Length: 111
Length: 116
Image 1 (tube, each protein chain N blue to C red):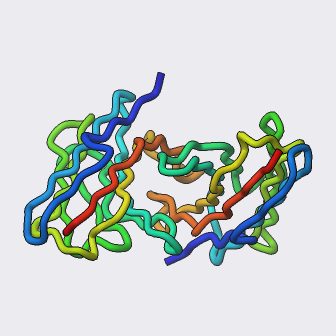
Image 2 (spheres, rainbow over the protein chains, first blue to last red):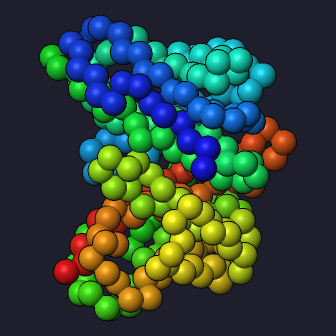
């Protein structure tokens, strides 16, 4: 089934640095969503970007979408220790009725 | 405040037992979803429901069934639990999607199920 693939699988940075995670997918989409998961907890929605949008911001988060390359990136600026989590991208399934999640990027921010 | 609750955070069952995982949402959402999450495999969709008594198979429905008798409640049933069903189970809900695709999903805290 269609699935977003995040890259890198793991990322370790220092507080204050920027973190960039990428997502690639296979077929056309209606929208792409990013979620965060703290260890052992449920996922929390971060941003939804529609297929006709190129960039979206929310606080320290910036998401870009390039439908010609079938890819998206999530940038977290000025990272904090509290940003330590796994980040997932999700795209719609072929019927557009559900989300298909990637395997995630594990971000570790050390102080 | 939006809330999705799951009946247990941790559950230990024996092989062959019938297992019920309950999920309740208070947002009047049409859609509800069950996922399992395993290391290295990410989240995989088991079943979802877009209305009472309606259900759709996800990517890995084998060994599972679901029940949605009321809009706010979506149950996942393991008819005869097996050790390979040891996993983290996540429930989510969302408003019905439209032309722009699926809406954002709200997740419960998860149930970590161990089958011995």
